[in-house]
Length: 335
Image (tube, rainbow, N blue to C red; front, side, top):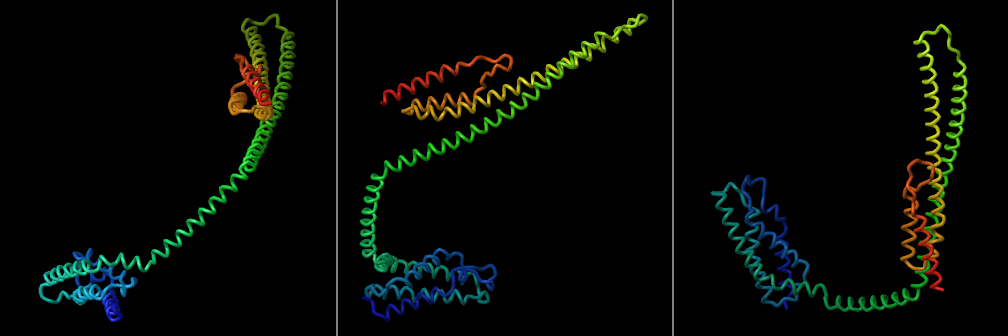
């Protein structure tokens, strides 16, 4: 095993070699365009190994091994000192630079060959790997015990957790259904109010139209009226009556449209209210999915209301009846 003198000498050499950074060794403002970029790879590798030796327990190395490493570091330190003191004022600076680069490469390779095999061993010893393995093994055993206990506890409480989840889902569904049902009900009420206003407007316009028609019927035609005057009088009557009749028809159509919207939204509100009762009556997922599909279709499909012209009849009622029938059969079978 290495003695204290050898370990101290190795650490001093490592400190001396790495007292400047790699970048400071490669470039210098006083060198102009000349640099030592050609030795960057060897510098990086050497500095990494030396910094590791500063932290590793080099005392564990045999005497001959640590002495061999020291012998490769001494010339390497000398070359590094020459690079630090390099000057372009000397003769043939590029040639001197190339000589130092080649010299350092050889010395760095020699140091690598002498030292690289022992760094993993020293790192293993410094990390006290066996102790860490033992601690890790104990931690794994403790974790396994905790996992087994947690699995057992989860298994015991699984049914309770499932009931909580089901209750939470049903509560969320109830809140959602109530919220959207209220929205549709509010919209139905607003459309119903609009429909009443348009119905009143239609009645008023119809009455005014009848009064105007009755009034213009008694407008006399002068005996000496010319054909053009007679045509003008009839045209005025027709235009006035046409405008009033068109306005009456227009208000009537708006009444029918508002009444249609009120009916549709009322239907959707009722569909949402009955949806939850149907899903609770369904005992299996197939029946529940069928109820969901038909309810969704009932809510979002264009449902005939009888207020608009050209509405196609819907066969959704038969499907709903069939779904309810299947759900009832499933409940009876479950009993």
